[in-house]
Length: 266
Ligand code: HXC
Image (cartoon, rainbow, N blue to C red; front, side):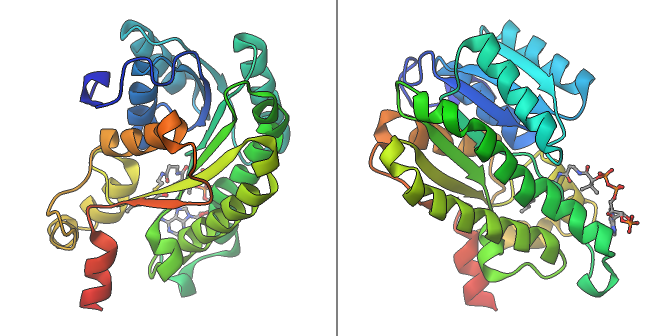
């Protein structure tokens, strides 16, 4: 996937500074390739040093301005430090993308308190810590700050077999809607993107490939295929570009129509 997979003008996000959690792999990686191809500068905050350094080197080879910091989003001090590093490196922060997530399939009755807490900490608490740390910089953005968080429509329906992740994502959506209102006077637009199953991601591998449910899940997508990371990157590009100037508090579902087949079949 390269920037050539985007329909946007090559300068649509020129010089916007993007802070993204979990941006080295999967949906995050596809997103930074799209946004970077539109002129954005990328700062990746994630847990594994070797993985983020490899991503920065790949992005640089594509002509994208990229930097990174090691950060576990469960640690609010580490988040503060990573945001400060981004601001020091690039001189600001215009776009926050809350993408880092943890998940595993587990019947809820068998889930330990720590298993529940781990996913809530990564997804929901991590998103709050990032929003909190980024806020003054988003407010100062000359372009108007943007926040995009990754959710799932399974957060709204409830997620049997991954209730911890569903509850966390529902919490993120609620947080996004509250911030959309609270931060509108600061010129900050706050939205969510809810991907369906996206090929080549840890989530789909863990939940559907390793559990032998790939065919079943593909058949439940109205468009009959898993999505690509560029499908999600382009939705985020829309929300972060001037095309999205009047959009805030939205959960944009990018799932090939999956949410409606679930309703029809249940
Ligand atoms: C039951 C499990 C488990 C499993 C972990 N736990 N995996 N319980 N079944 N498969 C429990 C552990 O036993 C432990 O509880 C607690 O969770 C913490 O586990 P750790 O391994 O110590 O945590 P950690 O090393 O911090 O790893 C976090 C993680 C891991 C979430 C468990 O999977 C991870 O790092 N994932 C990051 C990548 C990821 O998951 N990406 C997918 C996102 S997909 P006890 O009680 O034993 O101490 C997504 C949406 C997909 O969000 C959408 C598809 C449509």
